[in-house]
Length: 322
Image 1 (spheres, helix red, strand yellow):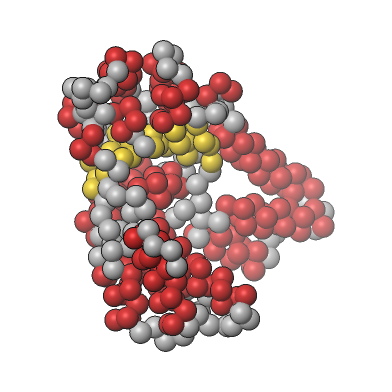
Image 2: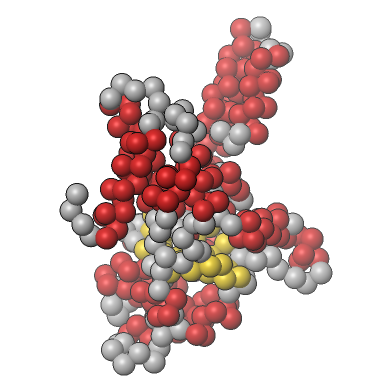
């Protein structure tokens, strides 16, 4: 049988959601069993792993060829622990995950889990990352529908393409993110709108209302004022994202720098320097500081370097040339 160390390693990789490491250790177990003369058991272990990997590949290649130019497909590896958002938002995301896992219990009483979610907030505040987290936590493939390409490339055919996407949502369970959603979700009464876009929005409203799949449908926008008011009532939940608070900035910086040990951080200076930056901008500044430290052959990230990288992001945000 597998050694005690292999069993412990399997458990650790499973609890840390490291699928590839889990497969690798399982194959080591199979090799160990083969060496012990347990050929049939080794074969069964390899067959189980091969089946799981093939199913994963199938999920990621089932989208129709004609839609792949506007749909990005991936297997998310972003765990919930990587997400830094306010506690109230964490609770609402946890509720989405819990309801999805317990959907059979809800359906027994004629209820459905939250599956249609709208994310609203400035760029870089975690909307796409949240979608990836939901895909990871629900163990579903992650599809990003690039709605701007959907409209501009297929004027006159967009509604037909939307129908294909919703047919796929019905057939292939996954998390589907309609990014930059205001490209098709704009207010129908806008004077500069064209008839085609209004028809596309009407089609989307019809498709999402009729959808009874097991997939999670997410729309994300930076411009809520442009959205048609009829959209809101079609969604089970609307989540608002904001620039990170001082506590969230501290958590985010600590999370990113934990991969490369920093010197003692002078928090007052660093937090002041990160004020007004988005989650993404802070993440990038911390990553830049780590990369520069590595290139300088430093074993620690200095507070001065971190402050410098945050300042660069601030200047970039203001459109200044450093």
